[in-house]
Amino acid sequence: MRDAYARRRDRLRDHQRTREQRRQQQREERRRQEDSPEAKGRRLAQIVARLRPRLRRVLGRGLARPVHRGILQALRLWYRLSRLVLNDGQQFDIDAYLNPRQWVIAGVTFTRKDRDDLLRHIRVIADRVENSQRAQRASFESRLSGDTLQLGQTPQSTGVALSLRNINMNLNESTRILGPSGDVVNVRQGSSPMNQIVTHGPDTVSPFPGDRYSNMFNDVPASEQRELAEVMLQDIRGASDATQENGRRDYLRVLGAVEQNRSVSDLVYRAMAYEMGAQGGQRQANGKRKGETISTLSEALKRLPMAPGGAQSGARRLNLFYKFYELIRQGMKPQDLARAMNYEGGKVGLTAADLEKMSGRGRRRILRKDFWTRIAQEPDRVTVEEYQRVMRRANPRRGDDFTEEEKRDARERVNAWEGPYSNYVWGEVAGRGEITPGGVKMADDEMSYLEVWANTMVGEDFGAVQDKEKRKQALFDHIERRVYSLYGMTPGAAE
Image 1 (tube, rainbow, N blue to C red):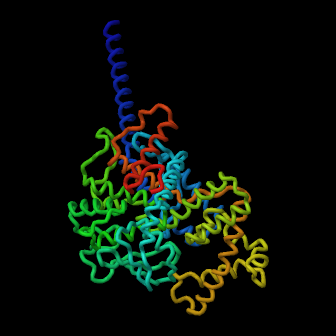
Image 2: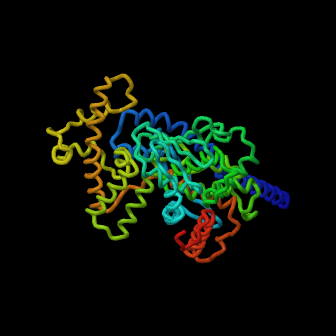
């Protein structure tokens, strides 16, 4: 009797233990599935679908920046997100993250805390390429006659970029770029100094099917894309081959010049795009490395950080953010720093809206001070209501709400405010020596592009280097040598 009881007890205990183990395995499996990239993607999609209409409804009425930040913080905590921001594009959208973002580039892991070191180095490389003797020579060979820029026999996108900067165009005015092939590429001036639109000229031989990154290569075979990428690698090196000159080469050359003027870092990523496009899916990177790769020129150009709509605003803010702290490290005094940043902002067409985001000093908040009578030279103190009325009239999206004369007068008055506002805010920012990080989404896109380039093209694994700083420096040196090689330059030499 006692043995039967013991056997029964042991069977019950074994059954209970087995059931607990099964439950534990189920919990672990459920946790693994919830933490998988696919599950996180689905959760993020559901969260963003709920967030977007709520934020559109609230932000559409207009909010002060502290209230805006408070709402985002509350929603981030409620939905258990690691980060929630509005992106930098012209159109409102959401960037939401469940975990801290990180990138693995040729075996070296970067987080948002240390990515700035790499992106600053990218800009140092780009500056050296842009100011090389080869780029200067290509610019000197160009000749401007009326509204036509005649390129030399060995044009490069870097040289074309320098030439375009010296041409003053008003809104919607165009310059014809005449390349060695005889085809014309038109550059039309947009609303800001660096906003220019590139289109094929009339009678172009074999133009691209579309003039956007999304449709540029529609129905263009992969073999032709690979050949064009190889030609563009020769082009950025300044290699002249008249037999390969055509409308597509002319177009990509001018497009690269315009994008370089929008953000100098683009010349680094564009060279990487041509390199990935030229290898045509023949992966050269370490076969053991996991991650996304690129096999066609179309994919490489679509993924460029400057390709999405609204990228210019993010690039502008990111570049000025790095410039600000570079000048501080150089020991520049606040007064000189304010003048330098005001000049840099004006040069790239920094808008008052972007400056508000970078400084946290909104124009409406300054209404409470003596800005308008002391600096903007308004005869009377401008009230919030008056300010809002003028801004509504100056808004081009208001359609037929106001007459053309009312809108023109309002725009002239707003333009008269922009300069003094910029001087005033940069003075405050320089005085405190601190600025809000700008262009976060642009920085993320640049890091993602470097990651996919390394997955596709870099065979070395720098993760094997023990010391973290030496590991990063080895990667920096590799990128520098690779980019200089793509542009036909020797590291340390003024080519």
